[in-house]
Length: 350
Image (cartoon, rainbow, N blue to C red; front, side, top):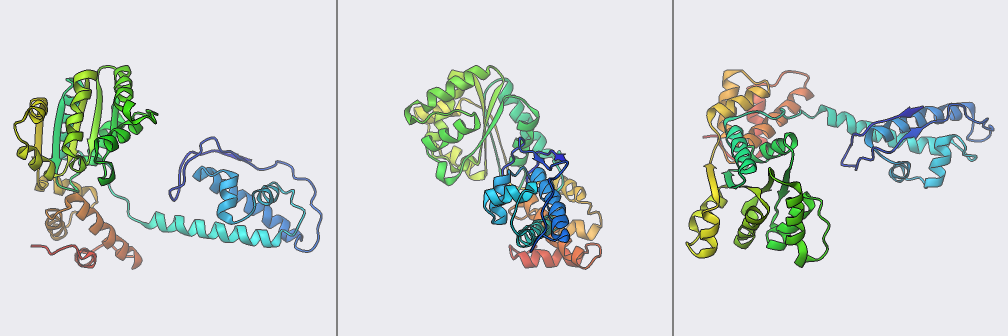
């Protein structure tokens, strides 16, 4: 028996090469204490379930043994039916592990799933700008408040267009070197020498050729020198650059002096946009994608969506309200939405 999959579960790394094969014909197993016919049959049934979990989640046998809390060698013999000791204790340990995994899977399946990518007005604006930066190539800047879908749009664009690479900046990678390290990882560049990072990244971008786009997300975290460094890749490697961040980035750009360093960057920016909050049209599209159409519920969620966090606020509020309704085996109500917003304790609806 052989199962094959390449999915992941509970944050585990996927190993598509992992195969779990159960013997078609097992060697005779001697009976004894803890090795009754019931124990032997139970081991066989448990092994089949373990194989299914291992394949579905991309876990190796060593990983499963670790998760169960069983030595690799013991688990390997137990799984193959060659273990000569007592089976009952090991069967119980495996059964308990399977029960916990399946319980977590059931809980995960009950959590409401956010709608897939939605073509809102802001996502179309950002998509058009990304395409411009990639084709020209040039530098663009799109700044939106958190929760308006800029990151989702960037990931979507990268997934359906070739030669697009996304690097996300955090407060810990805000320096020039930190940013270059994130870009190197996005490009699969291995360069331990920090002084050669720019050259190595540049060579990789040049090999990718025309039509390469580098998206820098959360660029509000970058120091000014790091943002200025990016024009090197446009000038020397023919690479488009997209700077995505919150509205702080836009405000900081306006505060830059007219000195040579900033002037050189300013003139290279082809276009920039700033969107502080989503339009009602976009909010209604997002709410409708959740299947919410009752006017009072739509009105309430629209009020949620104009708060800082935008689509993210709507998303979390609906999820919590849906979980409450599912727990009572009934449809979600306006009262559920209001209670969810109140329980999240993130602000008041004006």
